[in-house]
Image (cartoon, rainbow, N blue to C red; front, side, top):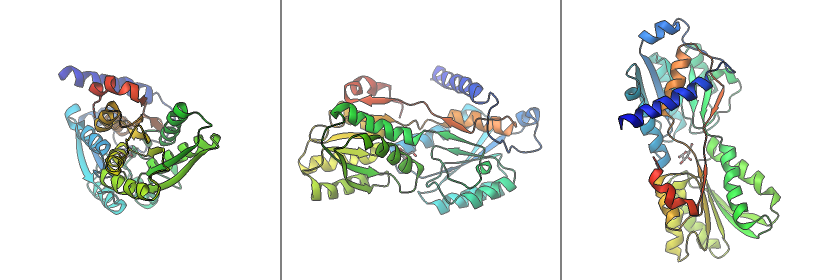
Length: 333
Ligand code: AHR
């Protein structure tokens, strides 16, 4: 256990060394602290979380909450936004009032952050955007982004389908979208749709949000099946939880998930790996939620006034059904 923690810390330090090699973005660190000052003062990270909508999110929250255990010189203030932007904005304002050293924001949606990020900038509190991206008029409103390439994930999901069926197959695809307006939904949809443009007979016949939750994924899939149950050959789910809910709906409808309907989703949570090992799903695009160690190193560097890369993207894999049984015991979330 101890060794695992050390190894995780060591790998994040190695990663951090490459991240902080002096390129890119603006670092609006607390103006007064030199690096020697900051090593004496406790670093306080205020983390504004999206909510608790999925297994992925729980894994991310747990990883972030490990931060003070990895470094006793760092404190964490955690806020759960319950999937509401207004709650996250309130949390950021409260972090500003409490004069935290760094604000980390995992934004539920991409837009609508300019005003509050300007308030953080005016208070000289640097902001690290985590997991989902933001669209702002002025990129200097945040120091850096740390997370996945959502568009790339959508492309990888489409490629899993193309690799299995070929470009010329005739497919009717049902799409379960994530939270509307989130970078995870927008990016994945864009990457997927661009990739299947080369496949003349791939048709998205159903597309609706399941808000990244298991319950809504099931509900929406039930409605898809009710209207077009005999037409759908592929389910493209923007996350695993909605996919797991949809698998239940498909079974209740009397079809075999993974056989009658080919299923591809994003995340890589254990529950979906189990489904895939059981033959009920066909492909997973990994999205890494274990961002705590990287956020810790990034926050410390920012507070110390070091320059960090503007976009720090996670490295992730893709898994097919034949790999599921072997990979299942290795999954950490
Ligand atoms: O932003 C990451 C996405 O949010 C994950 O894919 C999903 O499971 C979560 O709710």
